[in-house]
Amino acid sequence: FGNFLIKQVVEDLQRELRELKTFVTLSPVPDFAQWLDRDRSLDDSPLITREMRPALDRLDGEAWWRDETAREELGKVLPQLAAWYLTRARDARNRVLDPVARFHLGNGARLERVNFAGDLSPKGLESAHGIMVNYLYRLADIEKNHENFVNDRTIAAASGVTKLARALPEPKALATT
Image (tube, rainbow, N blue to C red; front, side):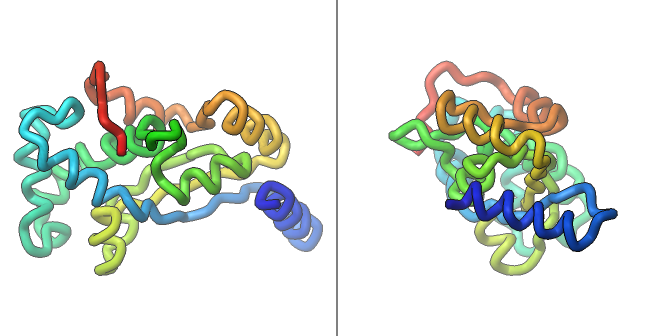
């Protein structure tokens, strides 16, 4: 149903606004902070390196987003962690952990971009440490992306997102839930 609805909306928009060629969402990452905070609490996190911890500790400070040094440090590690979370973190049923990502990817979108400090509202900071993402819907790719996601659990992601995720160490065994 969702796939049909997305395709219908894109087709309707193209019909009404012929000059419109790009269809992108700006979406929340509602469980990212909870996931990251849980991993941060582990002394021997398989994902978070010793070098990342000082920057991530700044999340515990009040109004870190207003501190230029904190923003600079977190701007280097949070997008990497968010990209990893969105492309690799899975639940016990091997599903993408993030529910919004599951919706968009399952409907044929491509994970296009991770936006650091994209939502600095209280809710955005609490749920995602300010991270938001873009999902790109290309009509020509929706069906293929949907089929690959459903059948092979393959995530369509832009090279920039993939590069961010690969910047992190590849843990051998990682608890995802």
